[in-house]
Length: 403
Image (cartoon, rainbow, N blue to C red; front, side, top):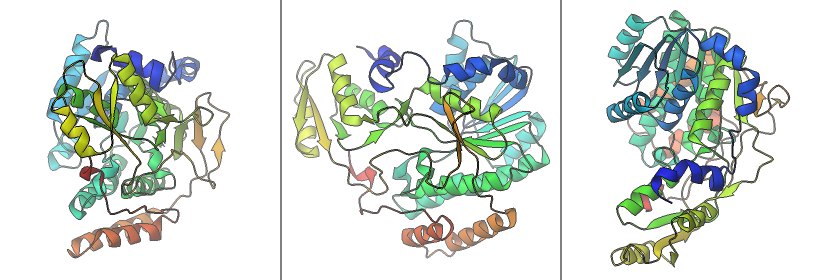
């Protein structure tokens, strides 16, 4: 295997599906999707990431009239445009623009008002990594992005209402055990508080195989740099391909009722262990694994290996803050519609918190942060007051302390 075969590896050894999990629903609802996308003006925020760019590729099949893409990652926008322009038979609207900027900045508001109105708006700009809670500054930046900017964006959208607004969530918002998941659960509450004013939907979904910044994508970088691999033995996840990640967001964006939370009906499928994927990865490289007992041993071995020697891999049990050993999309209290879609479950009964209550929560959270003597513990305690099922896992060790 070479790295150009990653989609094939995902299909055979990660998702273990030869066709898209969402194919049946896309076919069944293709006319509705075309009606809602064709000829429309679309804004995608955070569109250079794996999920945002996959959403863009999914909706381009239905030929929107205008596409504006915003992302703080200028290099990512450049590569996305190269990717689209280099793909045979890829539809790209004549009115296609990319803007390297951050959601919520004054220049973003100026662009939004001048380039609009937008009939479809999708937001993928978020802090998505559990490792983002390693210190108070990272936590503050995450809350600003996932919570405060979401509220500010919604206030902007209320004045310039799109036909559809989608904002991505995460499986980690269900029974959260880390601040990232709790911040996204609070984000969901904010979205739903606006659901009578805007047509809003969101989606929780599985790990995206080989997505930007993911453990699996890191395998490629480690091997390219002749560095050892580190992999947990006890963590299992559901996986979707990058293509599937965009498709679920497209379906949730256009087929949901306002205030609904979508998730893939993967519960009947087997959770995949990262160790199993790692072993299959090296099997496909025709490369043996040298199992190491520590990070230091793995790093030392990597300095002496040739291109044909067994590759140093350190397998370990997870011991870092905020890490769940398994994946879940719903809680025991959720009322779920499993009937409407073949591939999607829909959470219907999420409690709607009033906008005044949301504003009070945000005011108090900002007040805590602005006190300048806040701690990680004080943030956790505050979030627990407003997210009753938030059970924070604290081990005193961050992912940034590991390979």
